[in-house]
Image 1 (cartoon, rainbow, N blue to C red):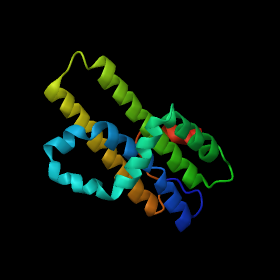
Image 2: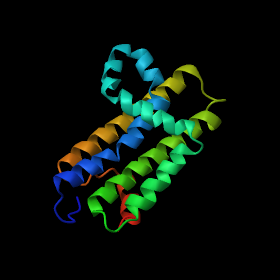
Image 3: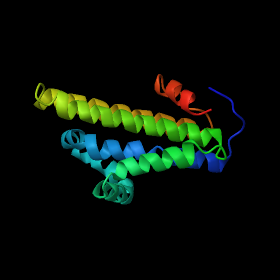
Image 4: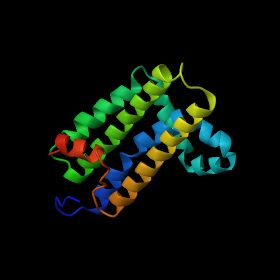
Length: 162
């Protein structure tokens, strides 16, 4: 845990908002097999439906996710006027989202011809549950005013955010 000063309640709330990006991404791209196996758990997604619809609109825009990435990176992470706590959590959310994109590419192009059916569902469910767990952990730590330390990802964040 790094102490960089006290965090205010608005800082904590704004820092939590950044984690909506990887959460929406993982729900859209990797939740299908999980909710096919456990359809009763889809009720968890009901509060997120309006946000999911808005996030799906970014997919209809050319390079919508890339535009969102650059907006967050340059307007939040690189802005020294914003508190370190918000910039740290935003960068961590961006890195989780980049990791999701890499997992999607690996599953789509490299592993698709090799693995199918059952193994693909296991990998997809693992990615989905891992990212949901990381997002929940990060949001809880952020609401408590602590820096969420995720191994390797947080180290990369500290290199980017000074």
